[in-house]
Length: 360
Image (cartoon, rainbow, N blue to C red; front, top):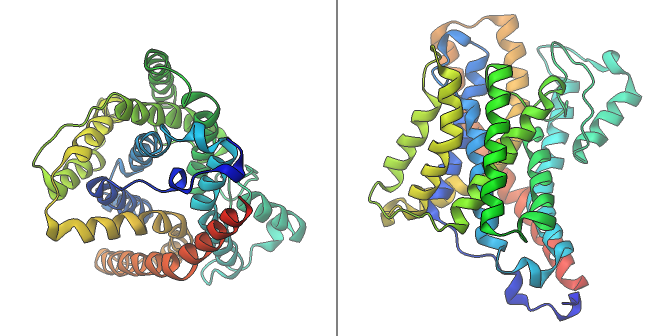
């Protein structure tokens, strides 16, 4: 259908599953706490907090299928890409700007411009805002995106969206099942060879990220298309506890298998339960709030992690002070995420959406 004949109803966003929105927020908070606690391994009770990214990927597959399966052919691929870029990219840019500022003005590490020089810093920044991996070495690692390390998952999210637009939205159920099984084998091989599923953010584990998105996105899409929605009375609190359980499992013998089973079976199951959970009216606004701040929280928090890690290295705070700083910082980060959403993300997306509509 030509763009100038698009029915505006095709472009409307469907209603959300509020419990799943809330779980997205819980997963984002788990990532924040996991990164804080990584600085002090002795206190890291969220040993598997990094699996929250796999939950994000699975939820993304479900939501993309729910939102676009019955309308992408009518709206067209380019319109789909425009909608996804408007939804995702403003915070990619904002997170990169924050990362650059933290890199240049971190009070606990000094100025690092001499490590790369102005030219490479500009190149690194441009690659970060455009989501073009440029894994130049910094400290002990080769992050794909120096100024916003969590953006590695957005890179693979974009890849999954491209695959969806050109392939996944067109294939039948049997082929999707086959692809999901192949992806499951892929992710098991990654866990077997790497010993963990934590990879994907750096050069040395680039394809680990590919395995994680391939399976979880496909599994989420399969859950939606198969209508695997289980009606239940667990509610948001019960579902949140089940999700956190996956992040708090201790490292022990066989933990690699536990990680794989969490990704292959447990998270898709949580999606089916979350989509069918009955939500009490009192928690509806809270779930919506968590869902709204989850993405800005995820894309802005790492700047603080960077500064905090250097502060911890230089000042060595005791357990009590460490806990106090982490608690206060997490609360402040939620506040920053909310302000980022209200002052920057929503206005920018509204402007871009209006611009898109005026071009139709």
